[in-house]
Length: 455
Image (cartoon, helix red, strand yellow):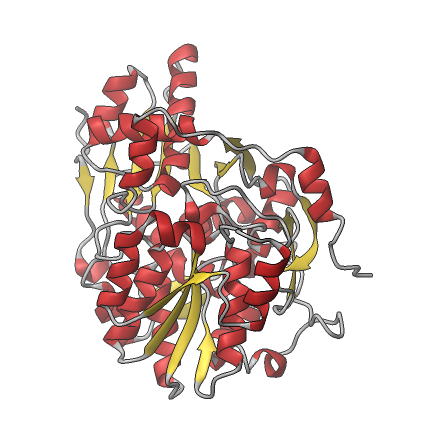
């Protein structure tokens, strides 16, 4: 082994004190959110019934580079941060590659993922505003688990709409949410008007993140003292998740490490956006160059097969419109096992970066993803979440390319969380019954045909 620790930890006093807003450095800013009724850029006043006031300011700000992290959030972060940066020596040995592989591990908290970084911030601002509680959606359950923890900490009510297929596949994560006091409803449900409409249109559906978002927004806007919070996609979430990239950059700078390739899984964009933020900022400012790769499932390929257009952020069309790479808000992804990546669109910030050619994207089959996850677990000792394993798959592929060419590239990827609540998925892979799902061109075209008309 080289003279670099297997795990690199920052000291507690080195924890970043500010979040970094990548949009401030972007030459082409993300397109503004649009009011669905007027088709004009949405205002803070129009967002006020849905989101917390302070979060609205963060959402709409594309000029302020740094936001101070409130002391109460910093103190909470110290329970599980700084998170380790790990050199994957054993994976390198297994692959017999000259590549150097690093990963940032975000699973060392009870929620099991990076989602707690934003959940605690959003709960803090809700409490500060004097709200009774919040509503949200969750796919695989990491976000719902994180938010239930954060709400418990601040004594807020938490109502979670969980994508139905994940609700059934991942009962243990659902029970962690309930342990922290959250109510959990499978979506689409019969509790909301939009849920009943979706069930009528798609009988027997396993749901989607777009469905669950619609229900959560309807619930929040129909109850006094509640607001809706979201675990991905939005600019405010990418802002909070920048803590991942900022810590990673500090740890790498300590040992003179500079990655050539940075890889993250891509569902709505929270992990990927947070991971790449300071590195992408350097690239945009011309201070350094990196190759960025977003990895998504072939079953829900918004970057690689979607259209860059304004679309609703939810299936029920109750949310504002966002310009993003999308498969259409009515697209119903197959019931694959990476529930956190089953979203029809992508963050407007990441979509703009991708459209500007600053980032690449690839899609992968879930059987190949679980093969990579199994290899990683056997040699690195951590059972990865299915979502994270998309990044692992491509990191392995890039390391094997280095083996072929003899190039000593440095590869860095985000390990978003653990897979201990995903064992039913691992069981299907081990039993050889896991299937790959790839939507047809006709399915995607049908969903895209219903994109809203925006002049």
